[in-house]
Image (tube, rainbow, N blue to C red):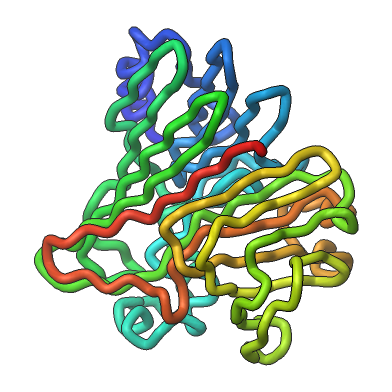
Length: 302
């Protein structure tokens, strides 16, 4: 963020009751200090880092997270757009829109500066609306704009990621890459996926069927079909995750991969897991000129 951009952000928040901004190392951070909940987000990537309500931290953020330009922080809810994961694993229609020999994993939206367009505050809730500046990106030939709306309250956290095609068709994949906290990964499980098909990225991308609840006992990287709410249970909480997505990614790096990850303590795999609300693989989005699509997710404590 340039000095001019940061000054503009400060000006927008001048009359805010519960929102302030500050620089943390190289990144601008918006702090939310509401009487009923607290949050922290960066304008880079429109990334919600922390959310606390009902005496619980709803998101996990790495102790080694780095507030550096051009690098997504490890934790919170990174925005993956306009492709997910390894670009080469995306559908052909998405790959044809990528113009780089070495495109960044999970797209470029999570490492670029977003603009705070507006916000609203009340005694019960706060809404924050951000947008990624439109225009060509060196690694992408697509023509589309993207905006993110965050709705925060003590009862729920919801995000809406809206993409609007420009003058030409657009095809993309996306995910709200949510990191959740747990004190014991061995005692953590996910309900709502039994009987559903999934792609196992760690077993030659083979297709399998989930039997019973999802538990964690080894490195996990799966793309599930979703057709009902998901119930996430840890020793501390039970959370309900809903949305309009038809795919979800479940991920935990386990022991060996943790040692190779950036911004990640070797033992952090025991204290986190990801359930990502997504439109990936066969669920990728195709838009005609001028059309819009919104990916929605909502979290509530049971």
